[in-house]
Each structure stands twice: as structure tokens, then as C-alpha cells.
Image (cartoon, rainbow, N blue to C red; front, top):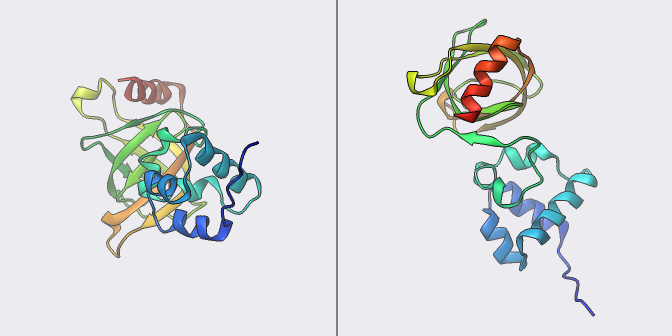
Length: 174
């Protein structure tokens, strides 16, 4: 006979949104990685939280490989300065924090959820990719301060040319 642990949904969601780390959630609620995945799936399917709730919390976003099943495509963490700019409106300069074939996490570009932008990534010589442009929609925003440099946003790529897609692919695989 297995014992089922009772977890209060509101308390768990509060901890999740407060930025508690994955290991913190697992410790507090006595969960293993599979149990944590199960709770995340239940919360998303019941519409109590959205996938963007997970992505907008940096401590969870950075550790999401541990829980699996949240991201649709694998991502590459960028541990150096990879410039990106809003090449149409203001030429705002930011940096890519991570990238996948479906989108990227960007720091330093002001955006609203649902806002469409045309962005240009300017890879460094070591990336073996040329600059590329794509259209994207902002899926989530996390503002940790009043400066635009503290804005971190998730952009889903909605349109990209085949040539630019090849450059993105080089960046992701490199």
C-alpha cells in the first residue's frame, strides 16, 4: 500500500512563484524529481499555473533540465555575451541568455507579453554563425528592477527565413 502525500496547491504555487529553487521545493514537500514533474503537469493541466510561470522564475528556469517535460525543445545556455537588438524600433541592445530552435531568453530588451518584435542576433566570431534576424512574440517577462537591463524576457520565434534559420541552427548546435 502506497502513501499519498497531501500537498496544498496554494502553498506550493506560492512557493513556486516566490522563486523557490527546485531543490527547495523537493526538500520542503518531500518530492523526488518524478513527483515534482507530476505536480507541475497537474498544475499546468488544471490551469492553476501556466508554462510561462515556470519560465519567468529564474531559479526554476535555470534548473528546468532537472525536472524535464516543461520545455518543448532543448536549449543551449549562453555563458558569454551574445548581443541581440530590437532592430526595427529602438535598436535596444540586450544579450541572449539561452537559445533553442524555438526561441530564446533575452536580458535587456523591454517587452510586454504578447508583443511582437523583430530581433537581430549578432553572434561573435567563435559562434561560427553570421548575424540573423527573426520575428518573435514575447511569451513572458520578469522585471527584477526598474532598469531595462534587469528585464529578462522569453521570446518564441514566429517567423525566420531559411537562411537565418541555418544561422540559428549553427548557434544552437555549436
